[in-house]
Length: 469
Image (cartoon, rainbow, N blue to C red; front, side):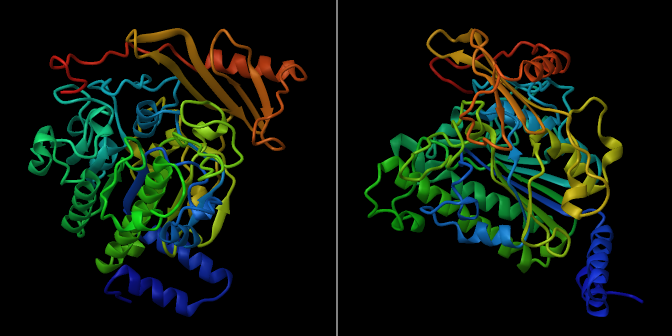
């Protein structure tokens, strides 16, 4: 029997079967879409409890909440690091923070010419690849630029310090500066997130007839906390007697919510909804907890730049109609190094994955089929940087490792290890290191065996008086 398109095929299957057979038909549909489109949205500094579906009582996110209701919501998903650049490095390369190429967070430390990214692998599998937002893994004219690492097109910011500004004089497309005339001479007329969002939609429209990977590392709600005065989302919070930063962060989150909704509607408009898997997450924990106002970290301890749960646990939602079970909630612990093997698994590009990565595919959990492998341990690290002296803190290596219920953490090498039982204490309030020295010894031994010292984390030369090129 001939079907005009995959949606017709799926409708026929689902109308012919019931109960368990419907589930089997959905799985068969997943196999029929051998090369699903992939949209990966990663916002910047959104806290674990900044979304309604994760418990927020103050920030309006109805569209992302609906996305969670239509897909799978993860309660124990993690970033690869507690700050931007190393987190992006783990996501792009499938390596944890003890192996990943970029471990510093000064903004322009580049990937090496031989580092392989998930975009490299998806392009080899025939995908159109586009990135829209903050790259953070190599400034202009370095080996680390996105066009050298698998992206057909990348539009936005290359250096992270550049991405601190929402009204810069230029953005970058494929290594070329794109001037923003409305922001010249101190004017603030062209809000970059709007432009970046429109470019992402343009990429989807242009590649509607072939498999595509649309990577959206959007900059809001990262500070500087700036948003246009006429942004509709801001009106919802203008009368709140909150600190200004809290009002702007909330408005940025609600603006993101609107744009996620628009993107999902675009997929429906282009008849791509059932052919596209969409991920939504944050790159690390909230930059500000704002307890008593937004409560961005909720009951989790810490925030960005901390190895406690509030710094590394992130919202993660995955939607693929007819394939990923609607309304599902998973407590599978997984993190950014797992993104590369997951996306290549979904895309049928496993044969291109290099040996030696640390990540594991979570496709079995998403698709509800096959055996889900689990990590022996999840690992994070980051070394504090002294911005005044422009050098790393010699004792500032912070580290954390999770094994099942146990979480071992320390924030300096000259401080003792702390041990928490996350199954009973996700807020990390009761240090059990003294009571379980055997666990501390086991996990520190694992760290010693499963990390390497980083290669030199060097910023490229910059123009006089500038932080980026």
